[in-house]
Length: 81
Image (cartoon, rainbow, N blue to C red; front, top):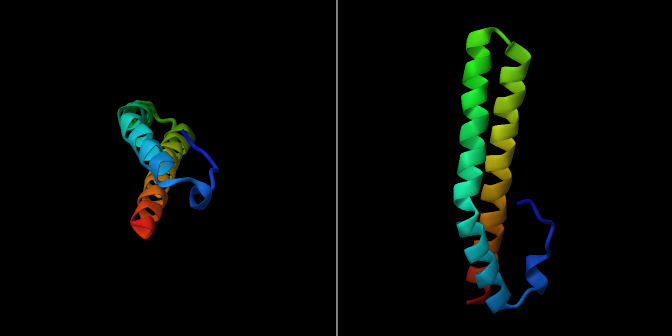
């Protein structure tokens, strides 16, 4: 899910393939984020404040990293075209 690849050294075909792989992983990421938010809501109703905050923080981190990776790939593709 998270990778530290150097997109500037990849060919255009590799970048397009990487973008397709990111799009196919969108459903899995959305499922993970949904589960984290669901458990956070459940823990909030149970009075577990620290668990709620940590789960929401992890959900935000996962969403942010996926967004930044997708933007980096798209920016490199646009730069090369």
